[in-house]
Image (cartoon, rainbow, N blue to C red; front, side):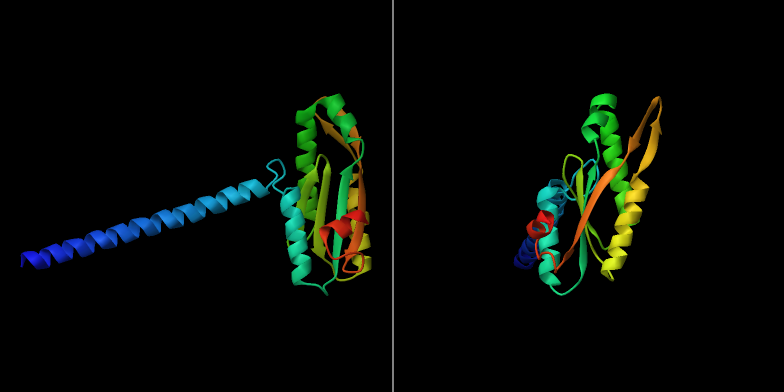
Length: 178
């Protein structure tokens, strides 16, 4: 009877230890996922950072080589002047607002990234070239506006460039050069 109790106790301890190890592994995976997401995200906009968006664009294009994509690059005109005149906190607000506008005006299937300063990119599947051109024109109209915040007012506009994958390139680098 004592031997049987010892075996049962050993078994229960082993199960508890295995459960604890499993818990640690799952917690570690969750923590790793959180840290990886943190490392890949531009925290001001919620978009992918430069390194992560390059990788995501390259992966997507590699997995779908024949699919038509539009690759857009957005740059706020005279952004340095906005920062110099109204301060960096206002500039940060504008960057966040631009990111929100981009996200609201593009399909949820798009890959978004902030690649530096006031420069953003978006890659999205498009039905045809004309649709992509109209979308760029609409975004240009949306971003060409007078803005007021408190006592500050300014005119905002953005330069928007775009090209197509696969015809203009099959990687982030090739598309960005266009």
